[in-house]
Amino acid sequence: MAVMLKVPRYRQPPMMCGATALAEVMEYFDGKKYNIKEIAKETEKTYKNIDWLFAAGLFAMKRGFKSKIITISTEIFDPSWTNLTYDKLIRKMRKRLEYLLSKKTNDSYIIEWNISPLKWAIKYLEKGGELFYHPITTKLIKTFLEKRIPLIVPINENLFHGIKRTTQDDEYDDIKGMGTGHVVVISGFRKNKFIIIDSEIIAERFRGKRGKVEKEFEILLNCMSAGGPPSLFAIYK
Image (cartoon, rainbow, N blue to C red; front, side, top):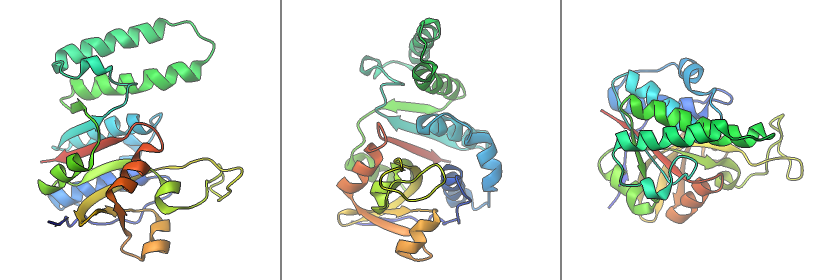
């Protein structure tokens, strides 16, 4: 069996991969063109990838979409919370947030790294977003695609394209560079590979103007896990 969804590909403006991916998937569902820079203004100022997913979900819900996020991030969930109702889950998150805000530490970075995702998750849930704690597997991804729902996923770009790490000046440097986060759209699968829409210009260098990349199931899961706990983000009508 193969699934190939007709997700449009936009050319990504610099540092706007998430906004571009969201625009592509929204157009897939409703046929409307979306301004990437306007999406970025509302979603790209978040602290890290998991925060961005919640901000993007809120953006989509304001425009009539439903939103579902699946993650195994323990910054958001304690595994014992898996089967809680959303009301109880929000209460647990609020208690966790209160504890972190009251914690004495000189390392504000560590605290913010945990506080920021909780703030976004609570806001997202209160606005009606769906959130689940579940392992990310090939079977789960294929289930969405078989329902004609493309998936937005954060990945490690260096591992995905097999390129050197990048510096703050966006130069490739295997010594001075750091791993780079990126966001792409999974638009289908065939045989043992997922089909991915990559809006980054580097994808054209490797794959031509269509920017479509095919990755073995396990390789893509590794790319999703390289930057932290993997997550799936789905919007639908």
